[in-house]
Length: 200
Image (cartoon, rainbow, N blue to C red; front, side, top):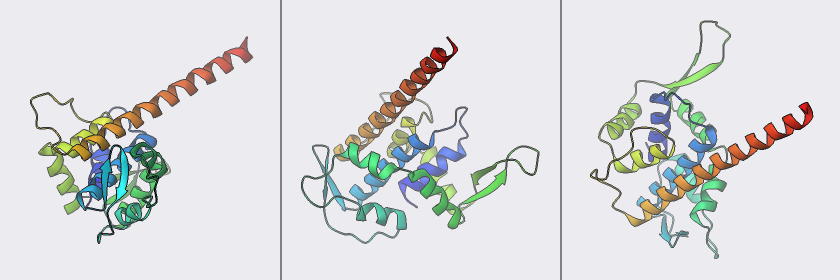
């Protein structure tokens, strides 16, 4: 399992009061992939730019796809641009992959048999691993989850991220999620103003 898969499972498992938006989750998943690629030696972060470092063997299909999509020619891609490009519909791709791997199952919500389907993690080694990382408050997973509004706010005396590249990626994820929320709010205001115009 990868950090992105663990994050996806945690986002579903916690069942927060306010559902995590697919766009937000997709951005965080792209950041999680990037952190795993840094850890695997596939890419380095240089002043917010991504410099491919070679082609290590990756045993995860989605992580391999992410590595293959790195821009390998100068000018190299900025982290923010990577998050938006790679993050497009990424949560749906992870849901499909986890369902195919037997890590997620579909069930109907509500009492009616024709209600909408929801997915939930099955009791598997992958789910237990994600839960263990979450229980141990593993800093990378907690930092990415906090961008989605999951978990308690971190206090200053808790252990933080000890890698500058990872810190840069996590900060970029937080910025991208805030930017997406700003876009949503702007659209809501515009739509409301447009509706008022027609009512007036």
